[in-house]
Image 1: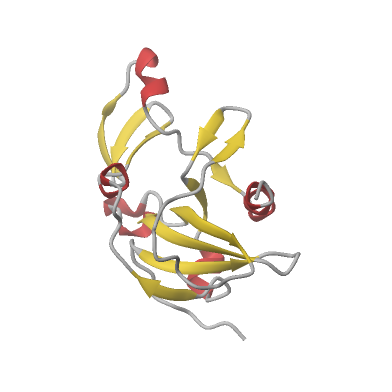
Image 2: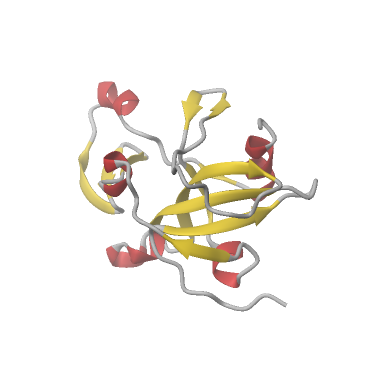
Length: 147
């Protein structure tokens, strides 16, 4: 039985896959930490490894994935499985990539910094920022299957 767990940016956690492998991931941004609770049901993470190992790699670097928009490292999804403990936290570490520490994203034409609104983006700026696109759990595993 899973139990509720507290999760913070920088926490490492595992996601069990249906084929028996594990994805070792790092939480980059937790939406509920944003003022106003606008994004309280989502979070963003990066993946360090996909395979049989459940350990945090010595060298922390994030895997890249492909979709119809191109290459990306950050995945947005619902926070339920993380908070419930179904995706267990296995450690904590610093977020080493500066663009992940100062996490900016585009949500419906608005620029956010760590979940706080900054300004409205001009249409020609959209391409310069990561777009928040929430992936369902099945799609998350499909991304992992690229490895």
